[in-house]
Image (cartoon, rainbow, N blue to C red; front, side):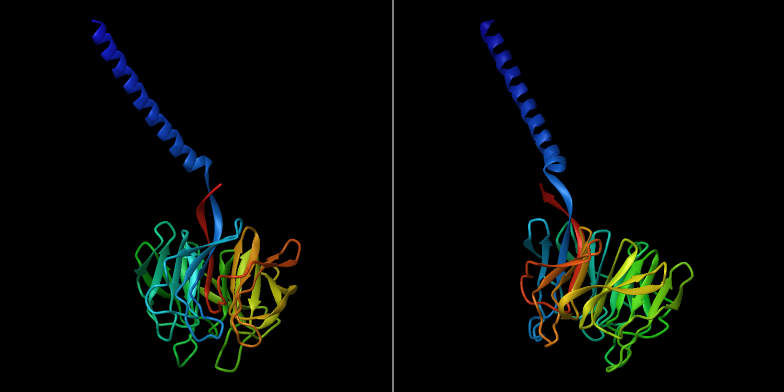
Length: 324
């Protein structure tokens, strides 16, 4: 009888220990999911060219602004690329083009860290831009080796297909393209090998129509733009100034000065600030310098350098789970 009681007691103790162990595992999992992990904005820098502009870089790197640490991601797929287009949709990174007549489109899954090829563009493009508007990706303008392109394509993730929308009023390459207030803005760019434009073209997706707005205070190519708090900021084109466009007032103003002129730099919004990463200087050399611009204070602050001198690269912001 004593032996049976002892065995039953041991069994209960063992069962209790197992249950406690499972509860501890569950609590630990919940802590990891909610207590020790949080979503934070990080910057992804994709490909580009080296300091002399001769080598195309295969690297994809992620920068954590809080820790100032870099993490290597899966390398750029296919042929090495430069002057390709990059944007994000649903926290994944999309790139297209990268050399003359390239119609390839790839998506980097932020969860899996794997590049996946999706439907190709209808028209091969180089020196074009992509932007996300109302859940769809727009590939705008570019160069096919002979002519600047006016055509614009729209990508639907559900059908994995591209479709043509209304073309630009003026064909451009190396322009700045940015969504703001439910419209798409195409700013400046090259109209031929030696001439640039000051035109601002605005696309209304509800009407599938482009209109001209107030021109820029500059004629430049190799520029980039981001929107923050319903304002558009333009950097690059070997300008040492940062310009701001107010879509509601249709007006331009100069808001800050960089330490030196830059073109083909990476520009993205992260943590309420505008990051300006790499690019080419007035000597035609790539740089590893990085800056932040705070529209609230108007201050430009130098940040830790990039991993390497980089220009003509992709630069976007995504959300990533990070430890607290």
